[in-house]
Image (cartoon, rainbow, N blue to C red; front, side):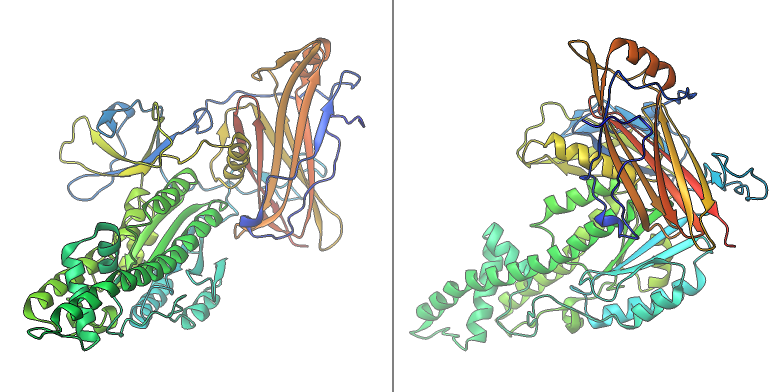
Length: 598
């Protein structure tokens, strides 16, 4: 094998302005450090008290908690001892606890080239992210499941929100469940408004809600999944009326009823499958946007704007989105685009055609439509409340709703526990969070989670841990690393940024194999632009195979990795990650680089 020194410049995977969702941690460059190498220059290292850690335990369940007083003000003075957490009614040990305040610190200005000596490591570098946006607001319009009326009202409210409620540090992105006419995060509001003007319903399946034979999704769900007698009776009566097979009081009554009953399940399955297809499209878009926003460096608020969709058969999918959002620091909010609740019979644009029935069936049908309207937004409500976000509904002031849902809570608490003897059965586990002394305080927290359905693949978990660390805004210090940057102008339009990452080997737990000390490290460096887009990235795997004498020398000097990226002038956030494969410990540091335009 060819020999490399620890800071050799190797080949790398470059992601030229690729979307964050396309970054992969699968491209590795292996380095074997052997005894014949001379040690690198000595580097100083420092220990930092670990912050909220997620990699040290498997099957961690995260719970974001917002506590408010009787006036709605957020409480910021609670401690771990003030909380009690229960899984299926059984008390759990809170393994990790932290108070999070989304407000981003103001950075001190980066030194200009005139102030810093050329060629120094810290040229243009700050540890804060002053040059990056403070808040990212992802507006997610559900154009697959929403009516034109609801989209139009939401569009008008959004235009007013954009004019009145944004600050210079904000970036806004417009996304749709259909994936059409989207705008990535930007401060160019003209692009957002142009996309707003193009909003209109884009259903995936052309279901005809005006058809007499089409069963409402909630009614179909009750029939298929619960064999509900009331829903079945209402559907039977509706099909009989629609097919002009009344039969009541005639010799053909039994044949008419039998024929309608035979069609009920078929019609219900068709309606439910169509509803699930549309709902899955909306949830896939939410999950993709959560992944996208996980890469952003500031506050991250996702606002779902929708009239709702049936999610009773998709609870596991909802929980997976909640878990991903919690792990990546994305707060999901939801706005019910229907506004003030109205009776389904008074809102023909939102309801299915109901055939005239006998009085008893008519009343039961009305009851089912009322229930359907109320549960329609349960899914987006749960996404919001379970991630510590806001759910705005039953109110026509959608502009005020956007202001509330786009804002981050002033503070929230992150709790995590590891379920004991967890069965891999996909079962739902209700969670209860209580305060030891409530004192009239209100607790908003995740209401449950679903157990995994199969054992986790360690390789997949490792890849996902690295990816989540790369796309996190938080710094972690499980391993003692130090990161420095420098840049120089190659010409008038291009600069080269060098990122130097050093790790102290003392905390590593080496495995002994004959006369060798073994361990594996992964170094990942990613550069983000001012709008949170990935500019370039590099990943290197380091296989340590050191004899005792060389291990002693590297213990003194540490290991250094260098990465270099060619970028135009601008403001960049550099994120450097180091992971120890054996222990699973991971560290990530941020640096902001300001490269002035000539």
